[in-house]
Each structure stands twice: as structure tokens, then as C-alpha cells.
Figure (cartoon, rainbow, N blue to C red):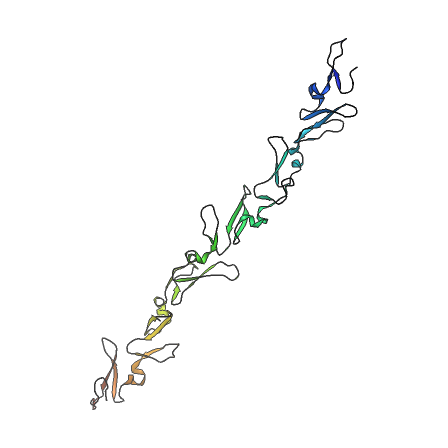
Length: 286
């Protein structure tokens, strides 16, 4: 009778004892290694690297470890096998980053680690289909990088934030969204926030009196209202009200003169009343 660990491969009446492991892998699973107990020499079946025993003792059934609890990998990792020895390899899925070690893979949402590699002024999110990391500039910032590199720059520093060339670019104090405000001496040409800015004097005469000319201060560009020829300011320095000069102190004419206007220039014309003659000189009538 062959000893434990050996099998008779001879033909009766001959007995030829052969290592059981050399015969159909000792009855072990195809994905198991056959060996012998050091004490009893009984056959022992041990699953190969990359396989796990799913049988009930004494049966050994070797199943791909990746098919069992993801091979022990993190729930956000993919289980595969190393080509050279079929050992289990855990690799974080797209959109996740290993915050553990090579042998202890711990997959964290990539957006939670250094903002997913996005810039400080960018928002990290995931592609709904692939879960790949997506970097998007925050509100108030514009991508000034090239096609592959996202560089989020204050939108106001890029093409004036899309505002008109005669507008100032700033940000909303709450949302940081771009706010376009017309520069001094200009007003918005429409209701839309991105509407262009036009010269204030072109809209309602810049707020000046209908008998005033609208212009701009050479230094500050603020609106300046100046009464037209033949009119004088009867308001204040800040609120210009242009009144027919003849209605204010008789237009500066003598009390015995009538005040009228030149047909061409609308300048004040003083004419002595009947019975009076001009004894003044030049433009001074008396």
C-alpha cells in the first residue's frame, strides 16, 4: 500500500507509488498548488496567488480574489492582477486618489485632495459619465490658460471682464460675479448688465437744462453744464438752471433799454427805448 501522499500508478499486481501531487494536481483545484504536510505528508491544496479559497473545509475551491469583496481593495478602487505573479493589485478608480500607501490603497475623492489639482480659484467636480476630475473657474474668474492647463484669473483682468471699453469692471460683494459700471461721464446704453456705455451727453443732454450745453471736464470727465448764449444760470453751481438772460436784470442792459436777442447768435442785444439815445461806448450801452 502506498504511503500517505503517494498514489499507486502501477498495474496489479504491481504497486508503483507516485507523488500524488503529480497526478491531476493531487485532486486540487486547477488554481491551487499541491504540496504535502510536513508531518503526515498528506496532500495539501493551497490557492495560488491572486486566488481565494471559497470552499468549505476540507474542500478547497479557488476563486479569483477580485471577484470576492473586490479583492480586499477599497470600494473606490479597481481590483486587477499583476502580470508577473498574478498578485492582487488595487488601483483607485478615475476621479479618486490614493491617500494610503502602495500596499494599503485608500481611495479618496480626488476633489478632496489639493482641490483635485485644480487652481485655488477653480471648482473641482467630476464628469457625470466618466467621473474624471473637471476643473472650472469660480464665478468672477476666467480661464487664461491654454487648452490643457486651467489658469483662473480675475475676469476683470481679462478683456475688462467682457465689459464695454468705457466701463469699469468690478465684482459683486456677495457672489463675486462681474459687475460692469460705466466710467465717469458715461451711462449704460441698455438695461442689460453687459450693455455698452455711451457718452452721458448723448442721453437726455447729460441731465443738463434744455438751454444748456453738455460737455466734460478735461481732467475728471464729469459732465459740465454750461448755459447757451443768451441764457444765464439762475440756479446753483451744482444745479444749473438756464433762464433767458433778458429775464434776469434786463440781460444787463440799461434800465432805459430793451433787451432782445441776436437772430443768429442769440446773444443779448440792448436797444435804447424811444426817447433815449446811447451815450455809452463799444458794447456798453447807456
